Length: 267
Ligand SMILES: Nc1ncnc2c1ncn2[C@@H]1O[C@H](COP(=O)(O)OP(=O)(O)OP(=O)(O)O)[C@@H](O)[C@H]1O
Ligand SMILES: [Mg+2]
Image 1 (cartoon, rainbow, N blue to C red):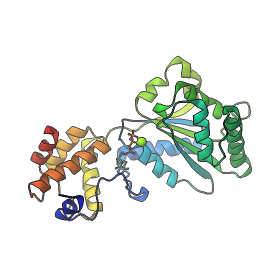
Image 2: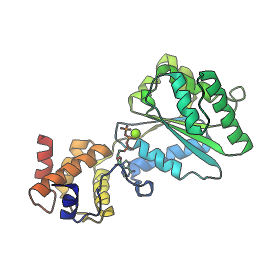
Image 3: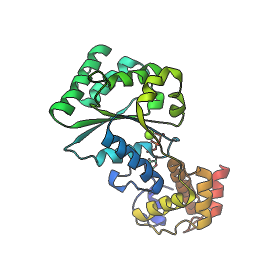
């Protein structure tokens, strides 16, 4: 059994739930759309924002899409996904993401980063939008530095916009006293929630149709059970749906039924 055989059994051109989904193909389900509009509002008003949600609910995909939709004449997106701990290392990574040669020292990097931001924003009139993904993995010291990074002209100017993006516990962590200064500066705290059942169904049906399959490949009761298992988390939904398709294929069924999904839950 290989992937090609499974796809051709269901008349599909490609893997429907791949993480390699093109930016243009990312769906705008109501739950995602609501968060996306709040991200746009943050970018419009400038400043620091926080985007949180459970693992796999679509945060990185949302910011990928938001970055792609920015007006290139007015904004420039930068993306940092940094799971390591130290402050110096964080600034090195950020400098590299901005296209500046990273230096060894924290202070030199910070100065170069701020000069770059001011130049882009003030001279070139292009507002930098920095997406910091996996921010729940940043050390406390690094999180505190984010505030310093956005302090321009005696803290009277938004020379860049920063969106911190991470798992739900980041929101709780930032409520701690040590982060008061940062959390007070967060103008938008955006929650990307799990999907309600109807949106999970739409997600699966739409992904199947997008690769040439029949929207009724899954029976309604199979869709319901997948939603119950995944709790409306996109990645878990995709995984459960694909594994159920494998079970159906093994049993030579053309439609994925509740029983196939149940077999996955028993594994
Ligand atoms: N808008 C979307 N349209 C279609 N599929 C999506 C969309 N958003 C996410 N997905 C699917 O869900 C998967 C998980 O999304 P993503 O990686 O964005 O989640 P995440 O919240 O960043 O997860 P983590 O917290 O683990 O980093 C993607 O690989 C993709 O397959
Ligand atoms: Mg992510």
